[in-house]
Length: 287
Image 1 (cartoon, rainbow, N blue to C red):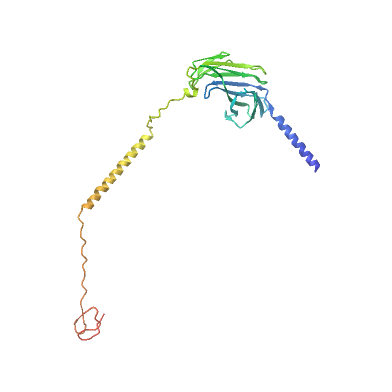
Image 2: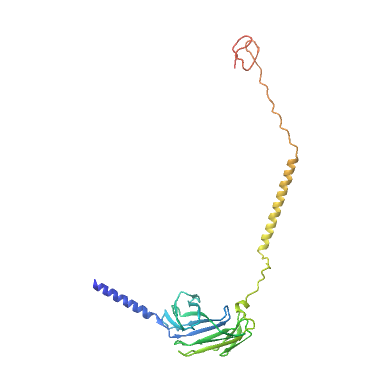
């Protein structure tokens, strides 16, 4: 009995050790997309990090990312083979790091950080310093819709308007060595403070309602039904009045047929219905 318990404990330890080794800690990121959206839907900067682990990474993998102490997490997710983000992964936020475990080679982290505001000016510095080795970066800055002018360091190599009618500035791609600081500085002015989602929202007239194509036939059917109802009510009223004004016919009197007179079969004297014997000769009358 003790031998069985010993072997069972040994097998459990071996399985636990194997599972521990199977979950590796990532030391490198093959591709890191950094998107910075100031004054998008909240006063501050929305940071979107999308990372891709090297092909030889053992999954599930634990990834430790630098995170500003003032960051407010918005999303932590894995990206599956169908390009769908799933927020079912485990993560832990500490003072200046975020640790997540992903079964997929791609992951997504979104968080908000405050900026510095002085009058109409806004400024923000994105900082990255991590033991991870980043092979390639793609940094994009979304210019706020209400920004009058914007300055980015390092200088953007390309600026283009996307399908959402917003201007995006792309920085030159580069690698980030382990424990090496990487920064992006953004400065812009806003004469009229307004969030991007508010500035790009389509105005909708609340007091003007355009009739839709599908609503018109319903209106016609409704008017036709009401008209038909009025016609039927008028016809019923008209014929009702005619019947009411016609002279009433008196019922024909019921003709009463007289009962047939009976006679005595012996002497021929007329008899009454109640007679049993003839009143003249006393003969018993026939029924």
